[in-house]
Amino acid sequence: MYSDPPGDARASHPFHMYDEITAQPEAVRRALQESQEHGVGAVRALAGARRIFVAGCGTSFHAAQCGAWFLEAFSAGKLEARAVQAYELLTYQPGLRPDDVVIAISHSGTTTMVRRVVDRAHRSGAETVAVTGFPESPLAKAARYVVPTGYAEERSWAHTVSYTASLTTLASLANDLATPEERLDLTQLPDVMADALTLEEMARRVAASTLLAERFREPSRIVIVGAGPNAATASEAKLKLLETSYVAADAFELEEMLHGPLAAVTQDSLLIVLAPAGRSTERLSSLVWAARELGTAPVVLSGSDNADAFEEAHRLLMPDLPEILSPIPYVVPLQLFSYFLAAGKGINPDLIHRDDERYRAARARYE
Image (cartoon, rainbow, N blue to C red):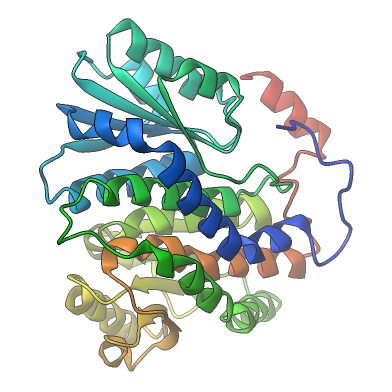
């Protein structure tokens, strides 16, 4: 895994990030194959766990949050799974035991805190599972079980394809823990990802509209809201905007949004709502109506099954699939939006300031 800008850095569209976003259908297909081939031991360990801790940093932590949702949902609540930021697990989590399992997620397999989490788990006698794009990495060599995501070619520092590959791997492991009657058909996911990519032009238009508005006023406040497993999707979208466009963006869980942050929404805000058909449709519709009262028309990602609940919004129709799987395709239009926003600002979204000596010096202070 590289630590500096790639030697083949590009000066214009398509940047590496774009190629990697569009590579996701095949990457998801590969992740499903890898998890079935290499996940048997990990599934067996997870099935016998007292508790499961899913750990990562940055994008991998958002994958961990979704992974915890997958494990509890697919096991019908029989498993207790908790997502913990790797540093917090390493530093503050008391009492790991031999009957716990730690899933450590790192695309590169070199993330320092994630690697140390595995060491701590071993000292406690807990089982460890590494989810990584590099099966020969230090993390993989340290863990008891390794489940490769199948994708190691990522060139952009704004991780996109490695994120959805990790989500797919975690969903596949969790699905194997479901009863045969409740198991989902995950073979549809590559086609679902391809369908999500058809929203590219809509994502480009939202980015262009945002850029046009900024020419005539202060930069728009961008707020992304999700519920259940898509609270993590909102956080991942916020991270991509911060990394690629260096813009001010916020992400909130639905009910938290309604209890305070809504006060900062104005007619100049860009509010993006993640609304797959599921348990939160009615409550998300209330948020959209509240935003309309404030003079802003949210952009809503919804399924066709619940699109009628958001008639007062700009709707981007996503493929219909179970809500628990929605974080995998729902992040795609948000990745495209952050990409086109960065490109429209004249920013190379691959670099996340790794070409700037000031940021190199800043990283040296903690790496």
